[in-house]
Image (cartoon, rainbow, N blue to C red):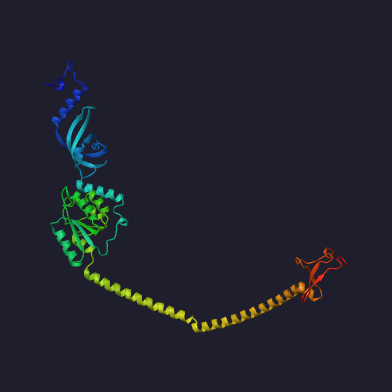
Length: 406
């Protein structure tokens, strides 16, 4: 049996561990669970997932810990300076003898935990630029297929289908039923968006449900749903609740519709409006074409005024050809005449050098009869050599009687 601390004697001293254990047991039995109000400070969240912090007021503070098994249920993120109400038990951390408050639950003071979580998520996503208009895409003018992510039973899907069929009967609709509230709603919506993005004919997606409380609409304030909308291949229209409701899905979607009915009217044009638009477009196109034709005709007429009659141009060209032909003929005649004169002069010069011309002047050529070689030197002849003399007209055969005589 343990003795009360006041009855301990020097004969039975306690170890430090025993003392801390006795203090812990006394605190846990005597105080039990309690509610404490204070301000968070020195908040830490190591990789283990546990929360370590101090809870303080104007005059005092106490160390506190909230283990991962308890804090993973918090919808908001604790921060330094936040005033909270916690429920827990006071005990001693025996290893160091520190007095600690072991927290099991936590609520923000003055603001509900869901609202605080919503404000924190909005701040985070806005800092990433996910609410910026610059990253949002325009809706297709006339989608082939509209995807709808909502509950299969309810007024929202009925209202959307009625509007889609009335405005544009030819559009195809693919509905992916999901749970729209409860713990499983957010993962279900994320899966639905992913599945519709794999259907290549889907050009736009509506994500929505009817109105409700903040708790009812909480799945559309889930970070996973927000990021799935941002990652969508096609534009997403958010249609959550009534006009006064505003969720994170509305902020990240490419377009926000105040109601599911308005979303259906937003994604497809009304048939009558489409026909009217086509008529107006056809009229504008026809007017533009006629205006273009008239302008081109005026331009052609202006160009024609600057053009000469092709027949006149042909006659001028023919005359020019005749003139050039005559000039070429005269040039050829003069060139031929000059060439003939040059040829005649060359012939005369050549003729003056011709042996025949020399013979005409009374000279003759002596050739040996035996080999027809020309005799150029009388010293090469011998008495009795037979020669043939070539005259300007005819030849004669002679024999040498006195060779070498001059």
